[in-house]
Length: 402
Image (cartoon, rainbow, N blue to C red; front, side, top):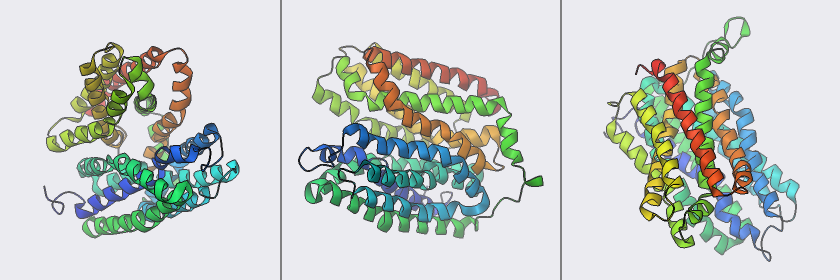
């Protein structure tokens, strides 16, 4: 299918590129620059716990304000959020670049980054596409996540080169310039082209008596909470396993070099999963895709648990975990629209988005706590989360027509 023939046309591909540079500059820049930030001689002169607090608090803030961002999308402001939100994140990165030895400045900068994450990334982008393209949004979301899957691939070598050439402060300023000078134009062009194809975004009419009736109705539906639990558990499972990939894999018998190579495979595996879904198109029933994906998360946990000393099982684990996570990213908004409806979708999706964002924020702390009891404790906890998520998926199957 050519870009022009696909739903959303070239505009979707431009938004995909904007998501790629957005995630590379806001989400992965900290990890890419961590070595330079931690250098005793030329680094930021702050403990790693303080440095890590920046992106952690950013994710928590993003989770807390996600419902508000969803309501703004329903008011027809989705394109504006995507267009100008990266400027806020760029300001945050610029402020953080002056934080040498000053934790308060570092945290303040990253709170602005968290605001940008809430306004400009998958949650807002998906809500806009669901509202603008309706049932055809599934294919558009596949294309966005397919391209954005390379954001970490872009961020790590770029961050390393910038840090070597400019130092960590210069690297943060350069990344701020990319957010303002690349992400913003891509989002402006992408939303403009989508508007040209399907019409300008129109706000939902006011709720009767000023009440958010669609959201209230959704939140009184048990399916809302089952879906929120499913999404939260899967993202907590994945975030813990990827955050602690190196100690978990070395604990299964892999040497450090092999563990690094395997951990680097999660991103390509996510892209591979999305490619498979893209090639399948709309032919696969949503219920079957959902349950199969959740079952693969369980399989991944079993492969890691029983793969001690078996390299083939380590590789299969990475492929299964990464591929399932890649598909699950696409399924999240599609499931929400199918199960809960598209009326006031931005507000509903904004509240649901709290689950994966908080899961990503909590995962490092919870994983570190469990790791104190050994790698098997982390794996067992993640496996239990995947099993419960699969059971929740089966409970939602009637709502998916399967």
